[in-house]
Length: 250
Figure 1 (tube, rainbow, N blue to C red):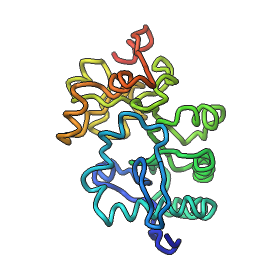
Figure 2 (cartoon, helix red, strand yellow):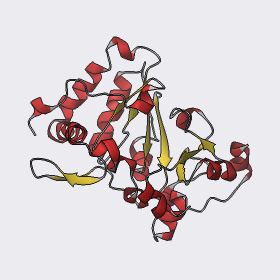
Figure 3 (cartoon, rainbow, N blue to C red):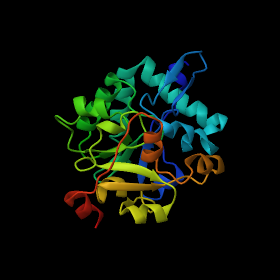
C-alpha cells in the first residue's frame, strides 16, 4: 500500500473511548493479508481470544474501517521511522495538551521488538500525554519495558493468550474477560465497563464483560478467558487468592 494512502491523522476515537476523552491507535486484529499480498499477525501471543475477538466482528469488518487499519499497519511495516516522527508530531497538537490520554491498540498488539521500542520513544517524546495499553506480549514487556518504563505509560497484561503462565496476578496489573458483570463481581474483580480508564486507574485485577456477540457467548460457555485458555493446554494460569489479592479485591 503506498504511503500516501495513510490517513492524515494517525489517532482516532471510537464511540466508547470518545465518551471518556481517550484517543486511540489501531491495527488490524490478529492475522490477515494486506492488499499487496503480504500476510501479517499483529497478535502473535493471542490464544483463545482470537476465536471471539470483538475486533474481528461488527464495524471492524467494514471495508472502510479495515482499509484504515491496514493502512496504519502498512505505514508501520514500511516506514517505522517515518511513522514515529508523524506520531510525535501529531501528539504535539493542542488537543493533546496536558491531561490527554491515548490508548495504544483497541485492536492489534506489540508484534515486534522494534515496534514496541518505537512506541517507547514516542511516549518519552510526549511526557504530557498518558499512554495505556492492554497486551498479551508479556515476555516482550518484561524485557523492553519493565526495566525502565516511561513514566507516562501504563499497561495491563491481558489473559487469554499463550503467555498467561508468565503473568503474576499477585504483582501484575491483569485483565480477564468474564461472561458478564455478575461473574466479575462474584470473582471480586473490578469492572472497567463504565470507563476503559478504570483498567489503569482502578484496582489491579480488572474484569471485562464479554461482548454480547452470540457466537462468542456460545464459545465462551460461561468461562473466563483465563479458564478457557487453561483448558486449551497452553498458557495455564491459576489465580490463588492471597492476602494481597484479597486486599485488592476488597
